Length: 395
Image 1 (spheres, rainbow, N blue to C red):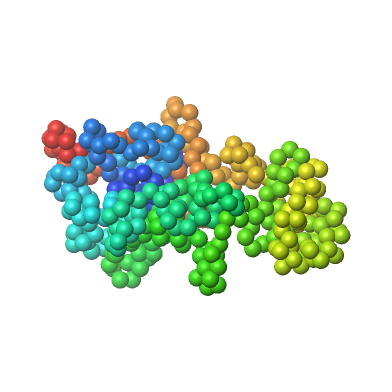
Image 2 (image 1 turned 90 degrees about the vertical axis):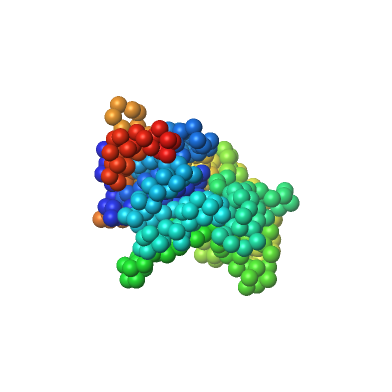
């Protein structure tokens, strides 16, 4: 079996999260070697994670690799006491309860920081820990809509469209992990932990990026542009003899090379297309003219010729084609992990590499409570005490 990364191996993380945003955050730490304990309700006391049970569906496996599993009933005082014993030695707690739930259970930031002032406590919510929407349940698509993304996604006039991944969930999780790492770095100076907070809404608004800046700085309300880039023309999807491809022929030098590859040098002198501003003004006519030419060859043919000329372009791959791509394979983005006699499972690896302390996918997700006895044993519980806790459905 592969060995864990050493990058974050000195940190212990208690994972109280569910569904996607929180597990995404913790995965970022687990893949870099943090010692993660995933805390779940005992069997029969909870509906369970909707992404699957023990080594459940692909979502569950993708999010919970590299963790140990502990069952703990936080609705019982004894369960909360065990969690607090874990907190004394932990570095990080991550939770994505609705804001009022953790305080009702007695495991909010102030309660746990009183036990361990060095604790970094990370909270992910739908809309923030306070404010007029704090008590609302959060869901990715709701955040996509409220955060403006659906108003700029899709073809002009077709109505709002969600993107094909839970981008608010994913980004909130990644930003929470970034906040945790910042807080851990700061702790090296101050010796104190702190409360890291983010939400699906904050993450989604932040990811508007230049589209948000167009409104805040220039008073422009961006609209749906379909496959056309809103400001750089021509950039978009163009038909080919066997499908479609993306082309980004922006800037005068690239535009010139593009016209030469398409054997349309006359476009360089055409006043409708001669400048960037003119191409933007006449984008519909230009796109139609380009499409007439690109339909005459295959996607692979155009990709080869345009890339050879230094014109950015690429195929539009289905997911199976993504993982068959030679560059994707070279980068090792799909990482197989074999466990004993089982067939290997391929996981999506981290998208960045470190030269000395790379990330590692070293263990499959735990089954429900798989490591409960071992973790409680580390806390000093003997076999009889653990059996009694099971009988009372504390673990």
